[in-house]
Length: 159
Ligand code: ADP
Image (cartoon, rainbow, N blue to C red; front, side):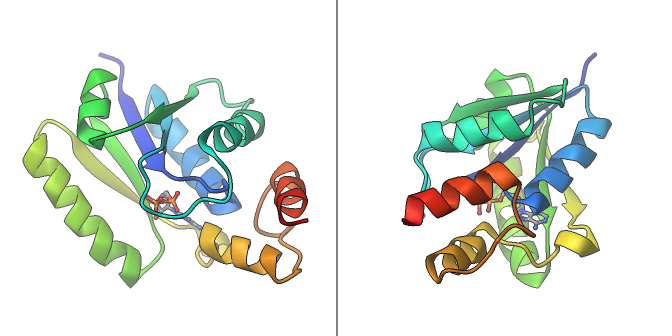
């Protein structure tokens, strides 16, 4: 049976840290669905279509990676896609605390779906989409943290 995994997030916008996780997870599963949440409680700078368009551009060379959006309960989306794994990245304690809770509650709702954590690579461990947005808003350069097209779109957005 082919393995399908879901990597959910808000990806507002996609960063080099997300790409690293995607690159590594794509090697572990036959299909990786990057699932863009549209029911996020966070305030977003890019709308769903804009976030998905950037993901499509940045990830176009990954043949087994699909970009989709989801609303509602993640495990229900994963089950509908026949995914058995949820992939999440772990940067440190703060991620671990919230991710453990999420993974446990997801498992209580759908025991057939496992969460798999990938440790953030040293190079990308400090990158967060929230900080990237803050830097851009303060007039800083974010080229080291996001792909070029994302940096351009961020700059365009804040102008
Ligand atoms: P959310 O909207 O769920 O907070 P994000 O879109 O910010 O999530 O990130 C999605 C996933 O990617 C989460 O599992 C998060 O921990 C992980 N992630 C974010 N930034 C990095 C990074 N720099 N390195 C590794 N994983 C990361």
